[in-house]
Structure formats: C-alpha cells, structure tokens
Picture 1 (cartoon, rainbow, N blue to C red):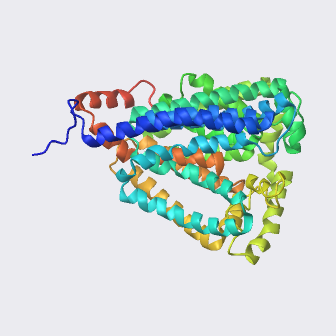
Picture 2: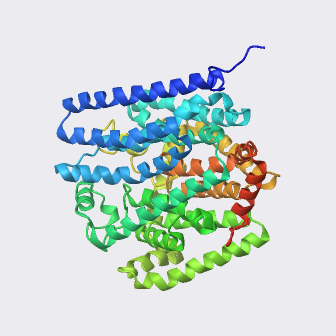
Picture 3: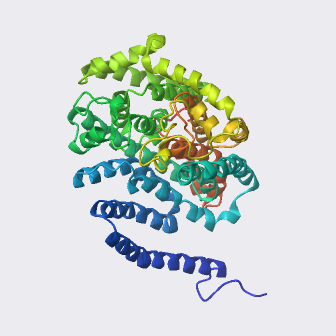
Length: 507
C-alpha cells in the first residue's frame, strides 16, 4: 500500500503542503505589506499617513494570529474594536485636524475580517446545519446589497462589511477547534478588555482628556454633554456612549454569571464595569442587561437560579452603597429615576415621534432602501456628513429601511432558526450548557435592544454573534475535547472546570 507520509517526519502529505502554504503566505505578508505601506504613505498627507500606519499596526497582529494562532484571534479583535476609536481621536488631536471620515474607522472591520483566513482554510469541515444557517443570512444580505449598490454607491460596501464581518464568526467557531478552556480564556480576555475600557471611562468622566474634548468640540456631539469633567456622558475608548455601553453590557453579563468568566480583576472588575456603564447614561443598555440576566436565570436549573440571584443581590447592594458616593451622583440617580416616569422623558417621546414619522415612509417603499442607507455609512456618499437616515434610534425601522419587507422576512426566518438551535442545545443532551444559555441571553438582548438601535451591524453585532456562535458551537467543542489523546485527563480537567469553588449557575 502506498504511504501517505512524506519524508521522515511521518506527517501526511497534505499537512506538509498546508504548512508550506501557511509559511509562504506569512513570508509574503512580511515582505510585501511593509513595502506597500511605505509606498502608499509617501503619497499621502501626514495625517493620512499616520492613520494608515496605525491601521497597519493594528491589522498586522490580526493577520499573524489568523495564520498561526486562530483560537487567539477573536480576543485580539475585541481589543481592536475597543481602542481603534480612541486612537483615531488621539491621531486627530496630535495633528490638530478633525476628520469626519477616517481610515482608522476601518481598522476593527479589517481586523475582524481576518477570521475569514482560518474559515477559508478549513471550510471543508463546515457541517450542513451551519451551511444552511449561513445561507439563510446570505439571502437577505444579498437582496439588500443589490438594492444598496444601485441606490447608495460606495456606502453600501462599508455597511455590508458591518453586517458581514460579525457573521463570519458563525463559521469561525464552527470549524476552529475550541475547547471549553479555550472559550473560557476568550471570555476572560473580553472581561479584561472591558475592565480597561471601564477604567478609562471613569478617568474620562472625572478629568476629560484633551483629545476626547477636541473630538467632542469638532464632532458636534451635543447629545452627550459638555467636554468637561462630570458633565459628559462617558464614551470611554469607543466612539459614543451607545457603543461603549454595548461593549460593557455584553462583557458584564458573563462576568456576573460565572466566576471563571470574570477574568483577573474578579468582583472589582465587575463593579468598575457597572459604574462606568452608569456614567454612559444609556438606559437601553440597562434594559438589555436585565433581559439577558433574566433569560440566563430562567433557563438555569433551580439551584443555579438561587446562586445567580444571590450574586445579583451582592452587586445591587454594592451599587447602593457606592453610587451615592460617586462624583456627579445626582445626575446618575436622576437618570435612573426616569424609568418610573418614562412617559415624561424627552428621549422616549422622541422615539415615539420617530416611529410615527417613519411608518409612512416604510409603507411607501416596501422594497427597502438597501444596504448603506442607514447609519455611519451615509457619510461616504454625502461629503463626510450624515445622510437623511444617518441617525436612527430605532432598530426595527433601521432594518425595515435597509432590507424592506422581503428582506426583513428572510432575516427574521434566519433569526428564528438561530433561536431554535440554541433552545435545542439547552433542552437536549448536549453538555456545556452554560455557553448555550449565554447564547440565549445574547439573542434575547439583541432582539429587545432593537427598540433603540440596530444591533445586527457593527460592534454590537460582533459581540452578539461571538456569544451566540460560542453557544451554537458546544457540540463541536465537546467533540474537540473527546479527540484529546488522554481521555482520563480530559475528564478530570472538565470535572475541575465545572466543580471549582463558587460555581456558576450550571455548576
């Protein structure tokens, strides 16, 4: 029989070819990319050259991780999503010029897009249920893209990336060999980044760094307060309070629920994230937090429910003692008190008026405006200024404008398949159910969050699809651990993992 091995190493021939291909791509990237950056930088202004250099500095580690350490890639991309807006502000401040459209806005999307490298390399491993799910999302995206290219031009390409890059996480987690320990490490990394974002947000709230003040003065963000200490709605390293609150909320839920997901800062980190979340004054984020926690608790065992409720009580008592002692506490408490008189709140009434004004527009154009008609992408075809629907504080309307009635129907069908698969993993015999419960909480959070914004595009979509893909991938995770050479060692490791002191809801 002909041997499939090559040389004396004993590796299969296909393994050698794949290793050589990876090495070739790595060497080509190391050689060609610096030359391209140097050439392009010489043709650009100093401001654009600085932006390009920062984008390259953020993108190159993602490229290397995608080739060499794909299981560590998503943790790095979370860091890029978190810090790229702050680097943009520092870059603008350093050259004394504000840019409404910046190359650094592409950095998170480009870094996130590198997950396509391991996906394409192992696409043959993708199982049929995952392929069917991806196809269900591809149909409405393709429909809206065709309309968007005709109506919205180049803005549709940027907007499509904001939808497509987060969805790449579905096949990424389906084929990347994660174990439970790898997944916990990713969630701990996310928690650590969130704590750093929260710590900077608290510094921003109390001191207001000059680069952040420069950005506020030039961007015309009047809705987030004044660029002065204690007078600003915190946006931390993100580009506005909404994304900052989103980043913190989706990290906070797993941090509260499970000790192993809190990261190196433990309960101190939880309290820092909660305090910073309060200073953003984004009430929709508090609603999402409550919905996610309730969804997780409701799907847990009876014993797990009580343990989680005790943990939530601990957080509530700590906040009850801490919040009144914070600088500017009266503003924070006044914002929370608006929940008891929501009908008198200006923001609530503005959203109701928006819904009433936009319903006739949607009815008059059931086909939809296409990808690129809503949000930040409208700047690209409008001289750097937001277009007619650049600010849309209602996710349902944003989806209807973008996808139209046919596209929304297809998109809703795909979401229905997702929740069906999540519930199947919670109710079925699949182990590692805390990940599936976290996916359920994320699905509920993003759907409820549509009352304020479209959570299926941009940073929120990246976080949501990451947590959902983790929950959907528990079967693959289990199979990967079963393939470990020492089964008894694996069983002992899993037992220690879920039977450590102070276990989470699932024990």
